[in-house]
Amino acid sequence: MYKLKRIFDYASIFFILITAEIVSFFVRNRPEYKDLWIVSERGIDARDNGYHFFKYINKEHPEINSAYIISKSSADYEKIAKLGRVIQYRSFSHYLSYLLAKVKVSTHIEGYSPDILFFYKYGKHISGKAKKVFLQHGIINNNLEFCHADRTNIDMFVCSAVPEYEYVDKVFGYPKGILQLTGLCRYDNLHRNERLTHKILFMPTWRHSLRTCSRQNFLSSEYFKKYNSLLGSRELNALLEKYDYELIFYPHYEVHRFLDCFATNNDRVKIADFKNNDVQQLLINSDILITDYSSVYFDYGYMRKPMVYYQYDEAAFRAEQYAKGYFDYRRDGFGKVVETETEVIAELDHILGSGIKPDDEYLNRMNSFFKFNDRNNCKRTFEAIQKLL
Image 1 (cartoon, rainbow, N blue to C red):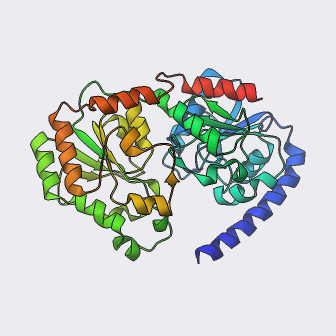
Image 2: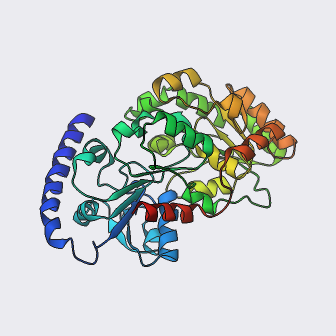
Image 3: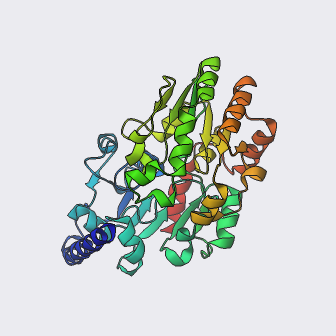
């Protein structure tokens, strides 16, 4: 059924695209399309590097004809509409803007398009002279083959750390000049609370095998069983009581359709949804991070805060999802790597009992990893795009 739906969707997109191509010849000189920069994330949100970059150019460079692509049904629509011009995601105007834009900027490859999957496959065959900028969703630490040069059509690829830049340059196959070491735009807003919040953030990533699975299959998955067990753990409850802490569970967006499957009888464990929570605010407003392989640990490391990696399935993750890159969690990680629920709780006890700060070993790794530690990431990104033009 999923494949049949995609075939129907692709046919519909193709028809609208052909129509928009014809209409574009008659509207290309209108003010709303002249020298247009379109910015987006996935068309449904405004919480990441796209949001922060759009906010920057509207404040610092209002002379730029810019527009943000987002659905009116998005929880972030009103927030972004207050900053500048908005184009409705998947509207006919969106198709025209995609064809006529001078600059296309997104956190995801083809995230500014009316359909990421379709345009990822066929976007390079569509006419247009726009400069395509990949802001990234996070810092790369694995060999992401879908980001390799032979699979994309990118003019500027943002990197944020020297090890990341060197790895992508060596492995991904991009010509010189496309990779730009400017830093993630959202880091301009990252800061560490001066006071402890008494919150632990549990933020694991997703698994490819769960993307199209049924609810029944999800409930029987190791992913659900491992994480749900930790949420309901008596030992975790005792730890939270001991230190007067609260744990916030916020898994990857792809898992949120199964969020109601997770349950806990512990009043100190909260399950956070996408609509009512902002990832960056969750990161800022917490003292400790538990994750597995999610690149949000780079954001946490940027703030120099303690963390623990709960990796119960490392071999399977490497075989089925992302091949290992330059970053070795045990050698380069910003916190301890553990494989069991008991070890997670023990490491949390260690962090909470020793000042809630990274051990010196991990702090040194954080300090040496990042190229920048300022609030000029948007500025550097904008200047790099100007040079590209």
